[in-house]
Image (cartoon, rainbow, N blue to C red; front, side):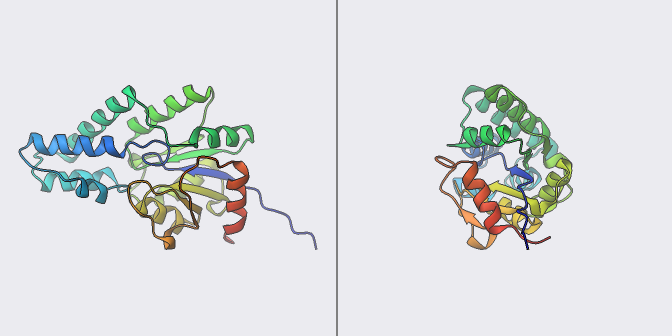
Length: 229
């Protein structure tokens, strides 16, 4: 009997910490906002929020004395981060090369992030300009989900938006929250930890970075770990 090899259907990318190393920008924004209300903010508190939804971040900042509505906190943090990214885009190693190979091969990609839509679209537009073509066939952001990462909703939505089965996708994540989301959704999950560790139980493989990796490595990982739907 001939066994047909199931092709990789799509690749799903987290944004902050995976495509760009923007987490230090977020922590600066958080610290500045808390201190403007007379409080103090430690790096450990910022790292504990890596990969979680912005609503969670706003709730914690309110508990630290930021007397603003959740929506205004999120807007202020996001504006600060966008200003930093506009000045210097902190690309993660190898990501542009991997994206270029995926696009050349006609493999659709989606952005799955817990940043707000304004931030996600700004990065997507920057990446389009960088690579000279449309990169993401779908963008799922915090505005689009009821339950943020580590809930699987965001990754299930990303696969659905591209019209593929989640089991036919591979996801790249830098955080424990994000990896847990992708893994529990059913995507082959590659963890690329940056500022926080990712448990082996939440990822099929852990890579140091995408530097030196190719489409061959992505395809190998997918076919090694793909689950049966």
